[in-house]
Image (tube, rainbow, N blue to C red):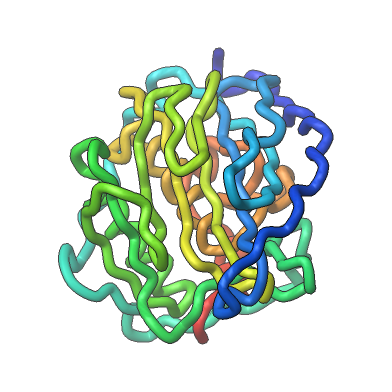
Length: 276
């Protein structure tokens, strides 16, 4: 498939009937929700809703990537981050992005809880990004680079570390072969990755999950793999899809002309769920 081939957004399957609420500890403020998106390698392939999770109702939407021949996925390696350990904080002189006439639902989109509150991380502590066991070499370096950029745009603080399991209070990044279930999420068919937040009824994010397709063309040191990883991490921070016509990272289909470069809508959306 060439880079100029047309791409179509796959239709989502009808949502499953809501699962009955389960009793939760009062401190969580209600049922925990999961928002997850899937990024596909090929056009016209849709997964619909995720298989039912054991404890969480979910909403899922399909994404179709700018499917690439080899030259798109392997031409660029992200620059190493300025700091490789410890707390990642906003760069000096950074601040909130201006709205500049941007429209929600067009240039950026935000997830909201059933009560209408923004789905977002607390600013009281850094967001921990956790690299799960088995991730490809270079994943932590790519995530630190991504975290540095997102810190300066959102005002959030981050840490990046390695663990072997999904953790409460963290965005855990897994790489898995197609069909392997991780934390109730599986990458199937030609999907490049899935990602999203788990959040309480008041919109506060409890943890995020990213599952990346573990194939040689989706490595974090490659241009496309890095862009997909950034896209999924941003979903785990609370952003939904911008309209496909916008020049943004968060469009439903990856755009070769964007390929991981944050646009004005991405930046403003991250400001809305940020700490400025």
